[in-house]
Length: 204
Image (cartoon, rainbow, N blue to C red; front, top):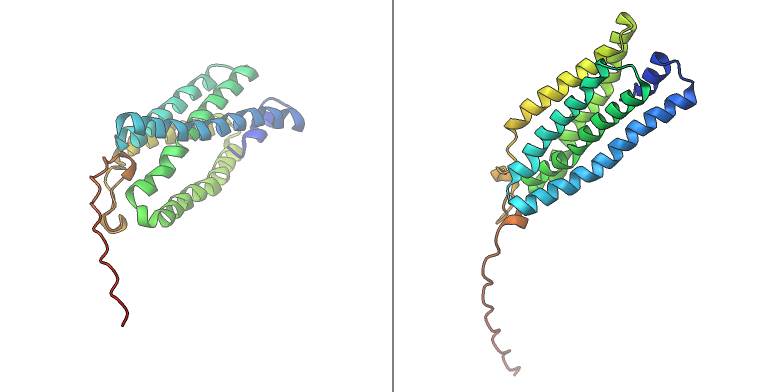
């Protein structure tokens, strides 16, 4: 999405200020999606006590919603409609962030920092490569629709690959002694009765 201001500037002949304004509207929708996605995944987990529904299923639904929001981009040239569609696509794409970041803590509680770092490394690599690749494609084809098609393909692939996620199956070596996949949703065990401390021995 880093090339979005250039898209508005070149495709619709906007000046830099107007281009930044439309791009900001799209990015702001993503900010709202970030927060709302985290709230929803926690809400679903409390309601269903099912990590697959709260994590994996939400990711699949949000990816598919992003894909659907991008379909009108090929049916209209109206700038306002296009901006709303892009904002909707980015909104739903960012709603996957909360469930995704929760999964490393679900499957590897003892190493949640390392697991999150590995996941973030992959997303950072994609963020580095995608502007370069899409930029080369646009320079050679002069067609701004191809990056959108590529994004739609990634949304579709992501929704399919997400079915292999198993947030309810923690790694045995990463759970820690006596830990569970998600302690929040496991019923509490009866408290162990405390034994009385023996009286101190008299000092001679």
